[in-house]
Image 1: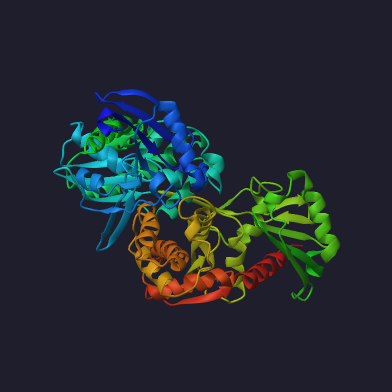
Image 2: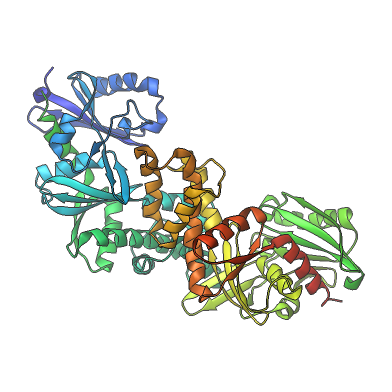
Length: 295
Length: 295
């Protein structure tokens, strides 16, 4: 079995996973997505899961990326420290079965004043650069449960900053005093933009969040707008973190379309333009680029 | 039945309630506390609950304060707008049974640029002033699920600001990526103080919270210190909101001892001193002062 004859790449996250069969000519011939994220799988069951993926997509080498390499996943793949490029990922693959099954390492940043970790976004980043979707020197915003702002320089990831915007919105929606106001889907209207403008002023979040409740009760915010306003507030705060890293330039927003649209709208409100890249395209390009380095 | 012959006052919150029988001489002759907060009671069951309280403490007039007057409580008691004093509360009592059962209104602030609401803290504030526990012109910090910073001037509440510090800590503890690190009780050691210092710098909370996870994974924060550090971060942010209102003066911290100790320690880290007042003492004084205005 040789990687150049084709392999399977899996973007294996906390809640979901998406698997692609990449053929010898570099095209994606088959794929599936399901809710088999690492939190739904017992550690001892990962070998069976890998077999099942091969049964569905072919008896090929497996390249696994994302939270599957975390303490909650199959095997903990030690982080590669920043700065790091695609060759560093290839050199530090965590081999579960030699030549046949590998986990992509995450990246760590352990600098003066800031510690951070990522797992899964790095392969998308390098894929987008390798395939020319984004320039090799830029700032990338990667929305998700934990948004990552990533600075890349000549193809190397130099550093990054995580903002837990998606998780915070989900927490507030699931329980607590604001939950009853936040059930609506987020629409990109005036309320969202008002929230973004407020977030860009960097208010103290725990203070500003309560005003959502007070304003609804006192009639200065429509109940139906509370969800969009709160999302805007969180995304605006997030963009304010990114603007510290942007140094005046514009940036790339890469990820799932339902999230990138929020960040693109918020960037416009901040007077920036950004290029939007689909995260699935970038992952596939990254898997192809990494797989081509393996034999 | 006359109020000067004695009455029952209930501090009836979201999760708990505490009831006091106040005798004709102004002393508290009997009391009980239980988990019968408004969220545990169906709206139609409040009359039965009131009867039960009278069975336990005596067939006396009932003065009810707190979330019992909210949309989730017995009857919604309209807010009294700021500025407001104790006479405004007395004039705006929401009478459920004339002369016999009343709900204390909450306070609202609907000013330019800031909307806010409170229910339950106001009676403690006025009680502390009426009984001389605090001066009539000061800044009061009232920690709880939703901390209130309250500016009082010559016995009137002029304005206030809510910071949902307690709720945020509880949300983060209950689910999400940080929950596994936050199960320990908060101790007032170096980690708490480090968190406070960071919070006083007003970082973007959603960004700083993720560093707790990264620092534990990368070894720069002990797992056992994560809870105290995160609590300190949230309280430090909260104190930074209060310092905007303090204008250089010191402040009062009033509430439950397990919370006031955190804020007193954080105030010291910010170079402020504060006087600590027990919230239960203040509530009893407030109920007595309000009850003495009723016939």
